[in-house]
Structures are given as structure tokens and as C-alpha cells.
Length: 133
Image (cartoon, rainbow, N blue to C red; front, side):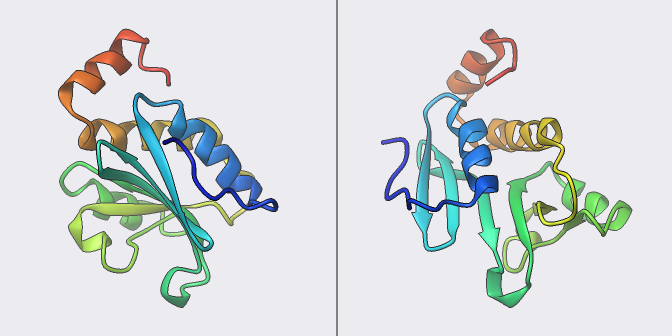
């Protein structure tokens, strides 16, 4: 199942993020209110969060290599942050509520996150596609 319970007035940022994530091999989307998560074989590789725990932020949150989340948030705090609860577990958020969105950058961070969550066979399939979803 690729997408469930799509509301009629879905956020445009979520629509674009869903398009990028669901292009990855065996990716699925689950909606919960204004939030969504994207999974591969049951493992979450990205979240779309709106005002998560009252933080007032709209973002895509992704897995990262060891320490990369802290580096991103320290280097560019106006764009990246450590989301509540999952930031301490290696995740970072890329804000989607601060001016024009660089969708190529979004695609890059979700693909890197996908590679950390997906089984090796699916990563090889992605590589065989030229790394492009």
C-alpha cells in the first residue's frame, strides 16, 4: 500500500514530499492527522511534521549518519534543527516553512535517509536506477 487516507486538501509540501518519497523502491506513506511518515519494509526513513509538540515548525525529518544531524543543526540553525524525541537518535529536521524550498536538496536528504533504513537489496535497486528515485 503506497498511500492511505489522502485528505482532499492536502498540504502542497506534503504532496511534493510524498511524490519524492514514494518514488523510492517499496516506499509507503502513513498519515496521522497533519503528520505523515514514509517507510521502507516497516522502517521509517522520513517524517513530515507540522507543529510537532507545539514547536510551530513545518519540516521533513530524516535519519542521518552518526553526528551529521548535530553538525547540520549547528552549522545552519535557521534551516536545520533537532526534532523533539528523535533528534537524540540521529534524526534532523529540514524546515519547509522558511522561504522557497530547494526540492533537489529535499530529495537528497530523503534519499540518504532511505539508504540508512532500506535493506541492501533495495539500496542496490536504487543504485541500479542511477541513484534517482
